[in-house]
Length: 518
Ligand code: TRP
Image 1: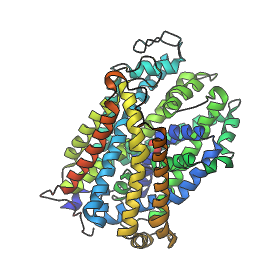
Image 2: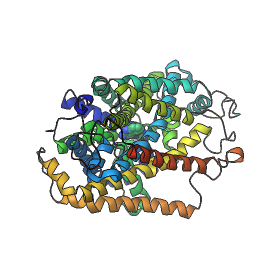
Image 3: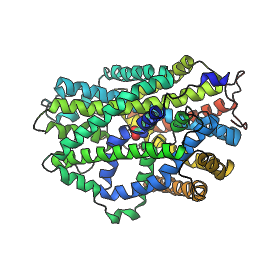
Image 4: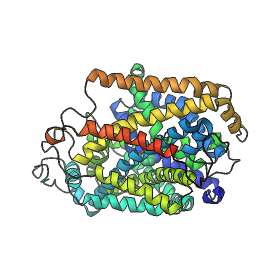
């Protein structure tokens, strides 16, 4: 009975479009640019490429190989190797990724709101007053004021719900719905991005910005912070540690070539990231070189401020930018929903409808929390609303540590329990380019060691700083206790829930998991 429940891709192209759609997201357009800018452009690109070759591609091959060969989602695939410990690791990965999806969709809600303001032109008019923050008209550049106005208004929850509704529609028909959507969304995305890059290229100082990204600087290579940033970026951008690639590969025919698939997905993703980076850097160099650029500032303040300075077509190009973000984000968020849904179907033999409703009920609740428009710091010394501050805080742990921890766990499970040589044999059976024994060394030793050093040095830095991230100045008064409680609730909650899902023995299991061969 298990087999009929699992769908499959209509074609290999459909899979490549969907998997690259998952990989190409906000991470490619703004997270990459913000990180690269922070570390000095060319200083980041070299560690990034090294991280791609040594960690990104091998882990992508592992996640794809697992899904295809074991024919199930992340908890099932890891459970079939290492029993309950493996299954637990798979569920925790899904829950960690679901947390990320919750605020990712909140971000997309804000993108939708800003896009609407770009379309109606109000984004580029003289700056508005923002009551919630006590800001007079003209106090801030307009895209910035407009953003604070948006996130401090309850109406923003409607935008978040719109994005959730689109997600539900796309995911409710499974691979068919996703494949149907990516067939036209992905080409659209490439055309829009190419258009923006061409506009950037023709700007007065545009090519200077591009060279800033492409000129290597070797002095930053000794900085562990830059390497941390490169590993984190590669994991997020390739959708690794989410369980997404395993779920998507589980819908492939057994004969599929994992190495070729990994190369295609990583190649498309990193090419897109390069084009997006060039476009953003050209805008920055032409109009708005800021001293520092966080992801949010990049997405909502800096790039829109640059677009506002263009000689022609400002509303249109503003709209293009936010549409680009929304489409790129949707094809990513839908992939995690599918990963969670397929994991539930595998384990509990639920109908798709029931699995969709369960995942989305949790997701919508979380996204609403992250969108809460209650202003907590009217002095604007930090970020703004309760939702945004929570978002920043949870992102720090779920994205900054969670994905890398999952990466370490999966490499240990596959490397030592499967072990790596077995996976390599399974992959090589159908791949044209054969993996050598070096692959085992990477998975068993090199990648876990690199990631552990990366996480270790990040933790050390936090300890040196002496405060738990985010507890310092924003959270005062009645909110003083919130961050620690949130962190504990999130950590204990995801761990406990993952444990529960692992130990739960459904009466009618769809796919045999723990210990069994798939
Ligand atoms: N790779 C995506 C990006 O670069 C991130 C991503 C993939 C993601 N799947 C996701 C984020 C699911 C949230 C939910 O943006």
